[in-house]
Length: 86
Image (cartoon, rainbow, N blue to C red; front, side, top):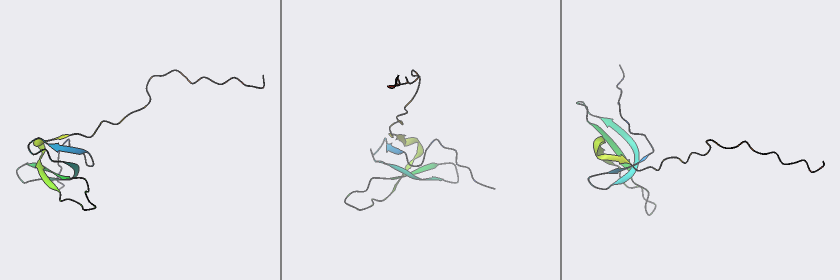
């Protein structure tokens, strides 16, 4: 029997805690026996030292990772350059 953690959190995204203002990438998710989901956030490396990961309640953090810049979409078909030999 496997344990499934249902959450909208995504590993690698940057989150900010609304209470403390702490920012970091999501590197760990844990669920306690009675359903509390906690997120482990790792801040950016500073002065070549890896800061300690901190734990926050799932409900107190929000994603601040910018949305992907998706290119494409409706556009005209590319035009063919005229053949210079004609």
